[in-house]
Length: 545
Image (cartoon, rainbow, N blue to C red; front, side):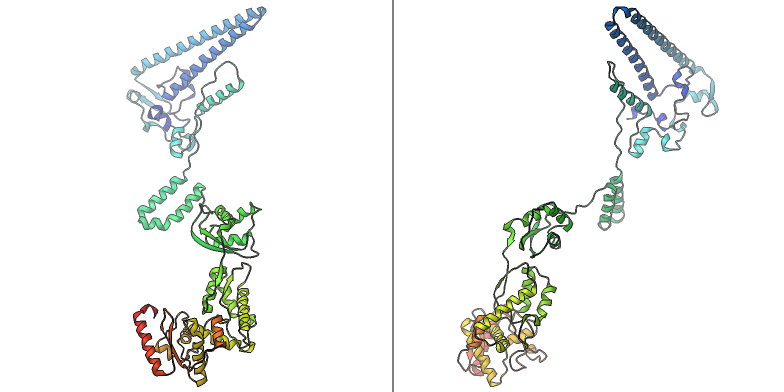
């Protein structure tokens, strides 16, 4: 690029001494050698003049060939005058060239002169030394900068006026048509360079140098926002791809598209509910069926919509309640399986009076019959609970339990459900508790004590727990049945209470928790032997403690 640039011309401001003056083109009177740019301009002017002469000559010859005989003399006269003009032009060019050479020959012997730009005498030494960039005046505005300098500093290419003029003339010639060639076109302007990424990059480099990796990690998100603002880039508000992992979502009865979109965003299936909902508006034929669906996390909105339309992703979910399950575990299952919120389920469970229970019932515990309940996306927590209560009432009626005895039977059956092992032992366990109640003895059930401490998954207790009188479910201290059910009993436990085995047993202990083997005793001494056997089994199986 250095060979194409005239640095003296580049650093000289327009209108100053470094720029060509009005008389420079005249030839005579020029007091300095031409720069490369000026030489190229003069050479281009000469080529244009010669081309114009050739074009005129071609036009004259074509007109002469097509004119009729009566205009031949006039055409010949025009051609003669054109030749004379051309000859005159050539003589003028030769004369100017001779003057330039003569001026150049006299320059070394010139003892000095007067520089009109510097307003001071010029010595022979001044004229003889090369022009230095330091001699050029300093630009005072952006308009005075040379186009190449402007391009270097700003990244925007400015087309010189002379090149722009030639480009315009060339475009004009092409538009008019004719046999002559158009002038050479100027360079196309370069597109402006975007300096935003460069600035942001310099900022990041400065941060890393100043604060290291920790500083970069702290400020990187903010810098990215600045870069986005400068470059116009924005973070995508939608995931890409088919997602990863696994998640189950539930569409309830009556949910509209906006509700489905919010559910998907809440489960991190889609990144933005607005993007998914906008896609729905563009797909008016899409309809959602209530139910649960297995999807993936971080799916694109399009992929999520496609997955919801695939019947293979529909989940045939249900709430399964095994016999002896506690209320707390049933609530958790309703949240995970039915898509209900914990707050909704808890509030519904506390509203005991809403389910038509006996007046002495203080909790839903025990009244939720163990069974499999299908998921109904349109149901509330209260509707699920009501279905379970109604089922329990039906089974109580089938067992012949009078309405006024329902609460007591459920409490008794919940105790048998937790203490008995094998189904065949249920009626015997019921008989033991009834015999103790009849004799005025404490029931001494570890299952009731554990429930009172909040542990619903074990039946073993410690000495301190069995001596804690503050635990109202502590049947070692408090005689009679516990104040409320400790589990939700099934048909086997209910029938065991309504149809007990016959016997005089006052004690029983399960000596093998894996097999459910249980030993029933009439006396305390017999019971102590069975207890020792159970303790030995526990020592051999510490995981059960």
